[in-house]
Image 1 (cartoon, rainbow, N blue to C red):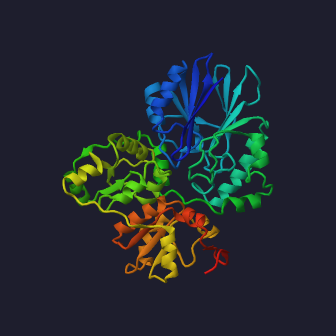
Image 2: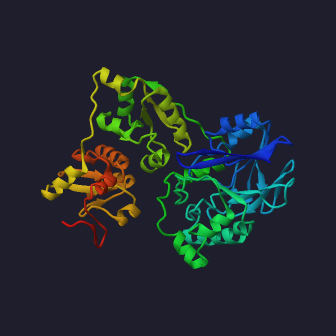
Image 3: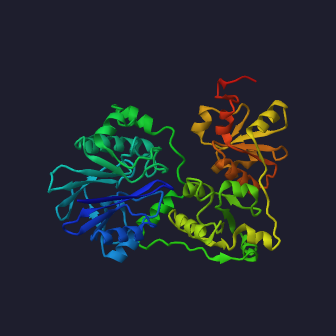
Length: 467
């Protein structure tokens, strides 16, 4: 048996190449649209012909590369019969076997995350008739299980997932290695572990969701504290089910004058540089989402509608190209171009750049103590807010700011704080697009606040220090 895992850390995706080196045949499982070249190159190096392309389900967080991979290799795309795929494919059913030489891929129907979801047990018959490993898709993660609310009501999905886990996956031998379609970074679960593989036995013992014996308790556990639903989810699912291959965006170079013109026509400037360079100076009206700041696609998807025309501001041509490909992964292909020469070129022609005002946590504390007319805005996730926050702060997650800007007093300065400093910069840039200008980014966020041993509260009690 041959087996290889390919991961992307941005939104925690994993694809697989599995097959037989003796037979020279393989299957690709869950290929992302930006993995096609890498998978073909890998198969070629290993002397493997790609015969099948398997999708564990219609992915909701990224665009699949099955169209492009099938066109270039002649492989058959195979998905569960409930997937509703409009492209040519082989419908799969529970118990189906795909043979690749001595290797057998056994289909296990594991609904819950989505009704069509499957897992794939890989068996090397030259060694045993028991599965060597199982590809769990978005059913079983490492230390987590998949969210149940993306395709059907959460309770219904959680009930189906409980059955899939306990009656299907956990019946496999304890030593079966398990590899999911997502590692840390995905909105399809709450997984934060950066490990890329596990075993059925280890998860049975130590996975918090799997040690819950009662279905009712499991449903309750699975339907609380879920991440924000990806707003672009339904569109990505339709792209992945569709008959036509999704597009891959390319970013063309633009002069500063062309950037100004397209911005005036309604294009949005997306600054993908690091957060500290954005703070130093940026194009007026730009939104900051650093390409290398973690969660790039998820954050863009939460902030910006997919039809919005985008102008990229990058540090280099290569970074702009990388961003265009990363945006294609979530179906964002309406890219007007990128600022050639970067922000330096913008300044050379005499166009204005604006800095983002920032304060330290010590300065924020001093302003609080002096009873300054200041609003403190916490833009973290609800779970982070509930754990601890600054007394008197207003909580609006960064991706809900544009819709809730009316809750802020435009006449008073706003100190924006997050966990480590990146989301507060994103939020501050969003506030500027809402014509709220008295914005102060809190450098270092709650991490710096707590490191300085400054006081925080929960909803009902002071957790450190006193006022």
